[in-house]
Image (cartoon, rainbow, N blue to C red; front, side, top):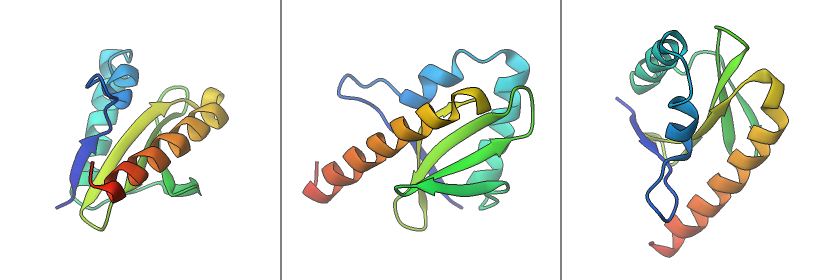
Length: 109
């Protein structure tokens, strides 16, 4: 089993939740199913997008994507989500977030 955590900012807000909370009920259900599969180790339609960030495509709607990084083999850090339309910007943001997370983690924060 893989543990999934959401990356939060200094105020305790989740980048992923901000995106997820804006989804309609059907899209949220589809993303929840994908996250459940990821917890079971089935990363499905996932590819590296650079900087240690991975993109999991959700085959529904406008091309939803979930962005995450790995911290070892047993931990996935959810960095955010988006659609095909905003893909480049979402990837850049996820890369920055993962880089900051890893720097804090190495310092023991």
